[in-house]
Image 1: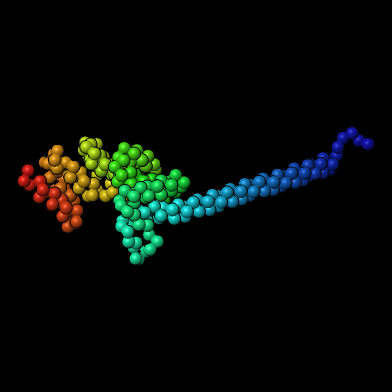
Image 2 (image 1 turned 120 degrees about the vertical axis):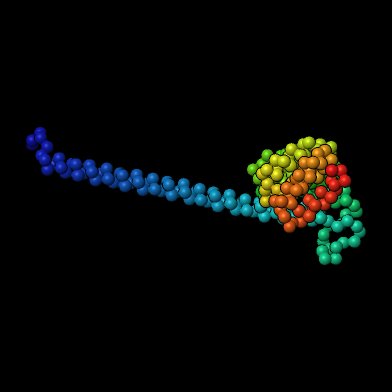
Length: 240
């Protein structure tokens, strides 16, 4: 037998080797495809489960938030509302606000990552303000301002300025209102902020207050806000 491999045998070996490598490649590709499909399926199922969980949490949070609003807008007095006999009734304002605070706080703590939960934080701060727990209200509003919701942040900053203006910190209030006027939002519009700013400046800087009132009339003519600016100017006229 010859020690040398004929060209025909060599060619057959190469064909065999090529077929074997091709088969291995097909198997490897099939395995890779199976892995990719399996991972995609797991991700899809995981995302679907996560979305279902988030949606369910939001629905639950919304229902719980509604009970807080029912308390916040509850009837004061002994007679229930004939239109809704299930609506809560309170003996006085503090009792109503305290109940609303408890409900909103529960929603905010249980569903912090839902929109109703974040809004419950805001209403908790309003309740604290109504109960004259101003420091706690401001702390709550600062937490909201640190969140990623721009509209809710604007609302929280606006309410913080309102509390400052009512608690002897007009300079802090003016600073916030100026910033909000320069960067208004849908829920905290510029004319509304300017009106608040002018109201604070009426005593400390009546000249600037008058200028802001005129600015409101110029930027937003023939509006209710412009009418309020006129009334503000009337209040300034005896002192100007």
